Amino acid sequence: MPDGSGERWLPQWLPPEQINAQQRVRVAPSQLNLWYRTLDALVDAKAEIEQALYLKVRDLFHLDVDMVLYDLTSTYFARRSPRGDLPRHGHSRDGKSRQVQLLLGVVLAHGFPIAHHLFAGNTADKRTVQTVVEDLEKRFHLRQVLLVADRGLVSEADLQWLSEPPRQMRYLVGIPGGRCEESAAALEAVDEQAWQTVDAGNQVQQVRLAQQPGLRYLVVDSRERKAYEQELRLRAMECGRVRLGKLAANVAAGRLKDPAEIAARAAKALQADHGSRYFSY
Image 1: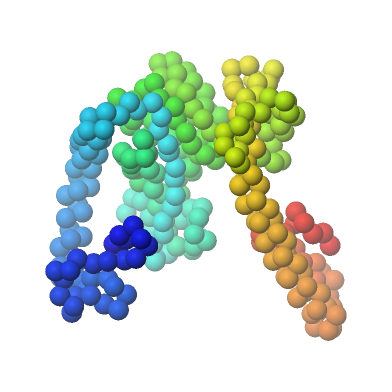
Image 2: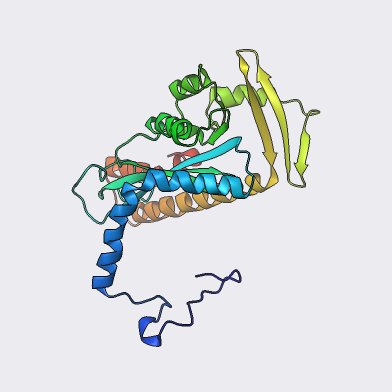
């Protein structure tokens, strides 16, 4: 376990023979199987445990929950065939499209994870939101809260559903910065005199669009984000340059002569790392 200094430590009462070279506790397979079997009991009581922990934390820290964060990820299994209800082939965030996976959604309030949900690996991200919101209403009695999520998790139908009675829930979702008419219109409406400073590296302003009178857009100018995206662009450009350079060397050496094959390899080289944004052939 980390001790806050970045170092890992293990309880001093563990005998040396139970600690391996990676500073991990050795567990006998028989003991490990017993631990795994207890998970069945935990899963059966999952809903009650999460609800009880939430109520305890809320009362202990006097939390007034008016905002929840929701995000989704995937985890894969080292197998290629589905088994049971959850492991399925789907969009893999790990680049393991041949392995089956499941989706894990987590809800946080005031930094505390209050609920998690498992979905079949082939579930579309946008089909999870209504299940999560209904669970927040039923188990945690959260109705007048602000739902914060990535735009890729929420569909237009979800936004309409969130806004309609009886819930009329507020939401804050991101929209794509480029190649999106909605974000382009919001950026076009920016007033350079209306920026509000958040801190030394960030400023924000609120924008309203005539075609979307019920919505507010928050445009953020972030120095840190600019530097991050610039680094990604330079890295992607360098990767594309290296791939095309290797292809050009093969052509120059006479190892590739067929124009169709050269074009196919160039297209493949530009598929990765968004290379087609920066190079043409």
